[in-house]
Amino acid sequence: MWKGIASNALTFFIVILVAIAALVAWGRNEFVAPGPLAQPICLQVERGASFSAVSRVLEERGAVTDARIFRIGADYSDRSDDLKFGSYMIPANASMVEVLEAITAGGRSTCGRDVNFRIGVTRSDVVLSELDLGTNTFVEVVRFDAGAEPVPMEYLEVADDADLRFRITVAEGVTSWQVVDALKKADFLTGSLETVPPEGTLAPDSYEIERGTERGAVVAEMSRRQEVRLAEAWANRVADLPYDTPEEALIMASIIEKETAVPDERRQVASVFVNRMRQGMRLQTDPTVIYGITKGEGVLGRGLRQSELRRETPWNTYVIDGLPPTPIANPGQLAIEAAVNPDTTDYIFFVADGTGGHAFAETLEEHNENVARWRAIEAEQGTEGQTGVQGE
Image (tube, rainbow, N blue to C red; front, side):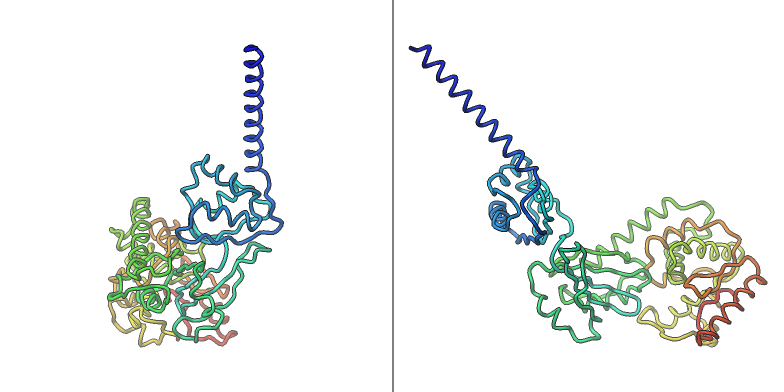
């Protein structure tokens, strides 16, 4: 009898083990198999939300077949404590493991609305965009000039939404005064800015910002990034540059930045100025003259006058030798790298070529031919007397 009982118990135990193994296998398959979503959805994870609550929402919205399996899989993967608040796109047929990755990986939210506060040289725009789930691309809803245009109703209607995300994008070539002036108009920031950081020390870049961030903290991060970029570039500089410190390299980078917006030209432009310095020539660059007039506070908005080219200011490289005393803008990374690693050329001159780029020359004769072509283009366009000639 006892043998029969033992045999039956063993059989029952084996059946239980087989059932558990089958259940585990089924759960594992459910966790990695394509999910039930027919169309992508945007999932908002509130700050402080529990994993259990988010799991239930996912089940209710049809993103996972079973909230319990989703929680068990997250616990097994040691990811249940990694939940990140924000708005996330859950693609159609996303598996539970893909959903888990989306809401725990961190980084920028991938769904909902996005406000990009774009600080440019001539204006600062607020751009409100919203993710189109059909194409998985952000579509612009409205754009307006911060501080200069009325705030559109489309922006006001969503300005207080909890899932609204914010970025600040600083363009290459803006001045520190322009950055500070723009940040004062950003209604999602807090705190005051009493001083303008030294010219050139703010990194043009894109910054993810939370609502309520202190303006001073934003400027501090911009300064930190620029410091890192300059230090890394200076450590990898080529030999025999005609400037001795990273601060002088930053001045040169700012001039390069203001002279060309064509990425592939930056090292060529750098070579022109390096060659001039090595030969004891003046830099003769218009953007330095403009900075001497505006001090970086706004845009000149017109061509330079001959009297201004002759006027002595600390930044006018037509009348001073060598570099000006400070940068004339905040250069981007490519301009900094060009300043410490210029092309090896014999170029001494350059002039606008009518395409947005420049024509470079080794001799004055060749340069005069390029200038004549540029003057003809100016006459055709009705823009005679504008800047664009270097080293006439």
